[in-house]
Length: 148
Length: 241
Image (tube, rainbow over all chains, first blue to last red; front, side):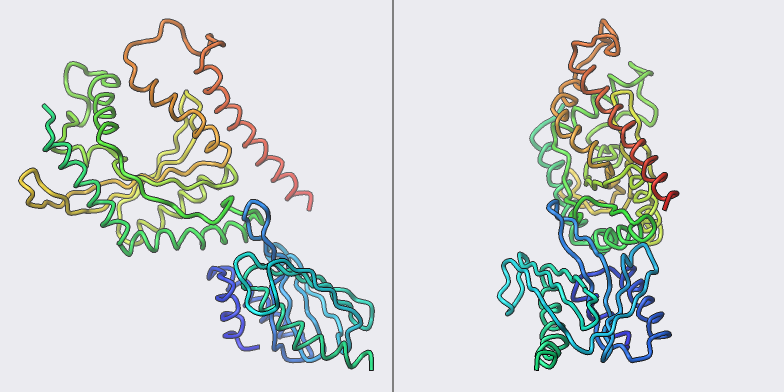
């Protein structure tokens, strides 16, 4: 995965350089062990009632794998899941119409792959657009192919 | 003798210092650096440094407060009175350089260890860009706990004849915890009144349990202790993981 993809995404999210470096380092480590090339990234995060933004897990996507580094701030916990087809997607959202996210936009997606592995991805503010793109480009076409 | 000219010169000077600082590269980077420091702390501890995104605001010391502080330093807290205090009399001609808080800002952190962590990082940053920086860890009998970071820089201010001069002035950055900030807000007015009073109280506040001082001062100490305990729990939790 090109580092620019990671840095551009982290920049969009407003992450500091030190966190961007952490995410880049995880992407590099995944690249070393992944059987396929990484071409997508998403950081699951949410905003608490007191305004604090909590960064949970960083996801990377290859052609047929979803790679999740859980609690990436504190841990090195990397997993891989196959998502050749998608069985189920649930969108939960507020102040977001799948067009252009605002500062009030929030969206959670629950997705189940063909092997019953489930993922939960959370987004706030501008990150809702990134999560929408992943759902529309990577998962919705596979949902259709799975049901056909 | 203080006249309108002294007041307006003071106000023009602190306004100029604030404007210079706000538009400086130093301040821009100083504020921008907070985020990096916060995330470095997050990676180190897994806890957020700040309760919310920090947006420090610069405030200048009102003229009346400068008068009050110079009176405290020259008279109330001067052990040499009626001779000059150590460092000389604090007078309008030089007080912008002598008072260390004519311009200041506040940064609130979430946990007790964050106070020193941030102070150290900001000191390193300030020194790195050539500014004089020092930190005082304040722990007062009145239950006030905070780090005061002083960053000394040069500013151009008006002289009495409205020509200009370059002087070196401290920016005071008060770093305190969220809990201390709550108590500070609640008791700020009380401290301002108390500090302007002269003379030795008849009875020590530590024994006068019905006094305002007893309640507010000990609350400050208790909160500081609780914050220490929170740190202890955090460390125990980290060890058990």
